[in-house]
Amino acid sequence: VLRRGKFIDGGAIAFLAQEAGMQVTTLDGDPLPPLHACEDYAWPALIMSRSEQVHQDIVKAIRAL
Image (cartoon, rainbow, N blue to C red; front, side):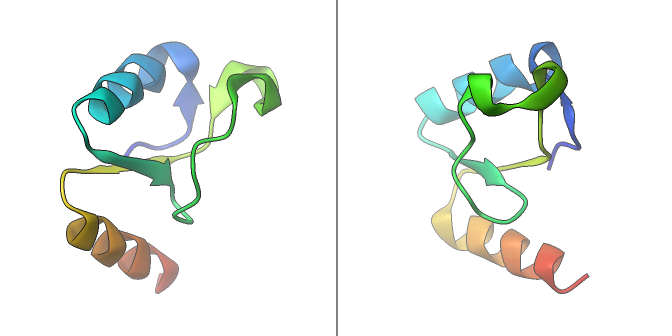
């Protein structure tokens, strides 16, 4: 789980994770927004997981907070 950060902070990590077949979404479980839709060159917080089940568990845990 990465907190909100600039593209330079999370962009490369998110790109590599997606290319490796990992699940990468926002904390709500939504797909990543296109870069042009993000304010101030920053992405929202991200979740990255190798397994769909683990990813869903993380999203559920965050929603329960």
